[in-house]
Image (cartoon, rainbow, N blue to C red; front, side):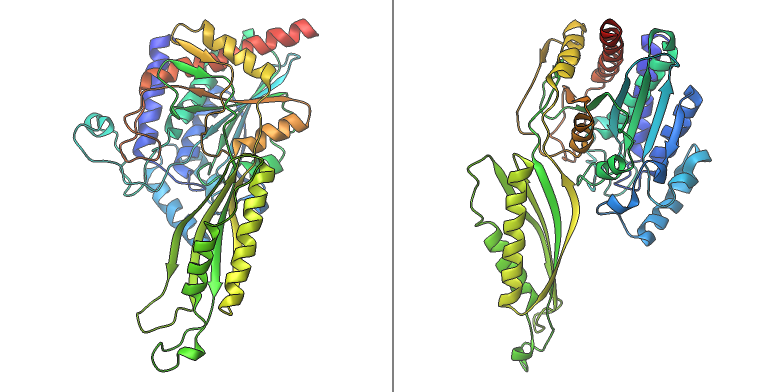
Length: 433
């Protein structure tokens, strides 16, 4: 297949996926299309619970929500062969290409989920103008995961077309629920990277300029996502106020004091109370309140410090207002530093690519949090190497913005850099052996 045809496929995949965004653990249509495409290319597939430990799926939607979305997916799927495999919301995929020749096992991770954002409807918004704006109310690919999936499928296509040039085994990991850092840990616990020698995750954008490349982004914070519920007792606010136990006040006290947590001398910290839901009427003492909180730390140790402070504050606030409380961990990511040797390989591949004007070996620019760090840390723990690279692109607006869009010129270079990294890793291991 020519480069022009591959570009056409990349854009077609990306735009179709953009029209039908699916959020974490609901990527049923998406995963079905990915699986069918990979099977057609000749990859060996493992799906659903075979690559996800259900005990570690954090913040998974309810069974009722999952079934409702499955019914939607049945109406909108264009490749229904695999849809039943993802019916319960375990939407992970591991596609394996075994060359049959001795060599390393190289894995790539591509995330699939969208966000709860209503996409902009302005006429000058490129997806609107070109007819691939999200068709789903309040759902949008506003972080580039549609592009990541397309890059993964493009890489799969290049692998199959050049299979005689490669040795060892290549794994393509399509991960659900990266948003909210909820999906990777379950795949790690299912041992999908236990045999991996080299692991590479990729992201598009994140503030990296068009035609620029970062071979190892080390700016991700460790993070914990917490749903905190206070349980009090309702009462008439005028007639029997002394009988009530005010959950709203417990939550408000906790929220205010969470922002008073001391910073840590070991590195940067973040904390945010994003939602507080409580109360049902002005004359009713609230018996229930919900806080949605996130903590972040430059390292896992620092994040754990912030998380423990939050837990202590919640306990104290609950005692003040005689409430019971519950803290649910609904998402988590750890910190991890990329392997320099592997980053050097990608750095070289980027510098050699005609599209890339500037490549950086490493960056510590803050980039939020990422649960690909679970894969990275596991591979490194087992003696392998791992890195997280970024392909720069022009952005219509920042990530998680309703006007977000990418420059599709970046898709093919991303595929080719990843493919060339396979060849260089094969060459490196051949020379070592």
